[in-house]
Length: 387
Ligand SMILES: Nc1nc2c(ncn2[C@@H]2O[C@H](COP(=O)(O)OP(=O)(O)OP(=O)(O)O)[C@@H](O)[C@H]2O)c(=O)[nH]1
Image (cartoon, rainbow, N blue to C red; front, side, top):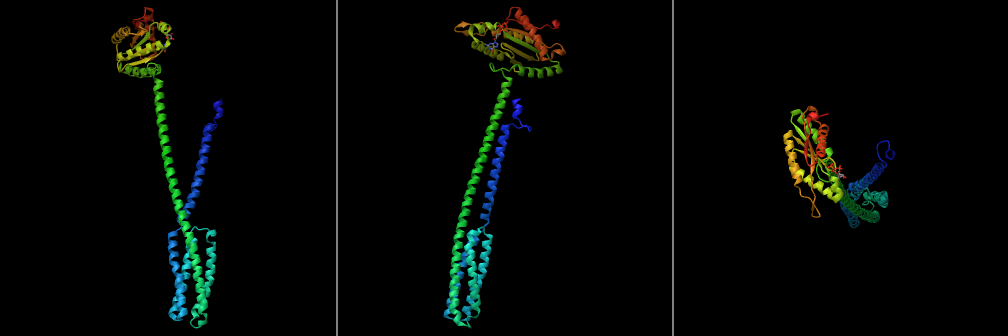
């Protein structure tokens, strides 16, 4: 009832749901953070600060060229120097347009560039004034000194703009470097995380497989003796009997039960009784064949299923078992403890006998007679007594 309550309609337990919600929340946050950072980084990395910087470096010569041509014109008012000055003015115009384009393409914020744009407006008005005077200055030489003053103002304005832009470029490039280093660290951290997760998963899978194998082994093994348990014996017996029934081969089953085991327990204690069981199991193991199924099917009861074995073969082996068990030397505090077993054995005779429960019942009936006959002996099931 409690389990049903703690499970929601979709088949998730509350704990699983919490884990999934936390996982989804964390993943969502990680995706948002990464997307935000990636778009910011992308903008910064898109800005071509190197090209922009080289354009600014080239532009710094424009002011000097203008000032020089203005000086030349002032000293020698000749058409050559006037042409040079007009050319310098044109150069500054076109450079100004290129730089304004770079500024728009760059990811610098309005806050960063506001004062530069204002200075550009001021520069525009100075250029317009110079453009208005320069073409006629040879006709009206009184304008020469005003023109020269204007060129000085233009040069100063350009110097201010370019030094500010230069500072911004350095800041942008530094930011790019910072972004690259943060991204490298993030990539390394993610790589390590992925490796750790993969390693964790591998360890978990390895552990689960180990536990699964261990559980499988435990589910078919008798803990005390290490022999197969009743369940495993029945499964294997079923398989062997099915094959034998088809081929018509005889299969024998012996049940081996320790005599008066209760007395051993009572006299020497339960742990000693366990040791006796283990010792007997070891002896049985050495005498059983590879193809036999040897299992502990009860407290002091073992079964030995012998494929392809007729009644004579089974009896012979069981007699040898009785003898070898009698010969086991067991001592308790220097007192020897006699150990004997009784064995009931049966062999498939009819089609119906190829069934573990039927064979077991027959062997058990024979064992009963062995116990009743005085123990430490073998009794075989006699088919005519069936039923
Ligand atoms: N030490 C130990 N004793 C066990 C274990 N399993 C069952 N026993 C004991 O085995 C004894 C079996 O006693 P009984 O069924 O009366 O049979 P028995 O004393 O061997 O007498 P018979 O079979 O008639 O010869 C009981 O005292 C159980 O407690 C075990 O794993 N370890």
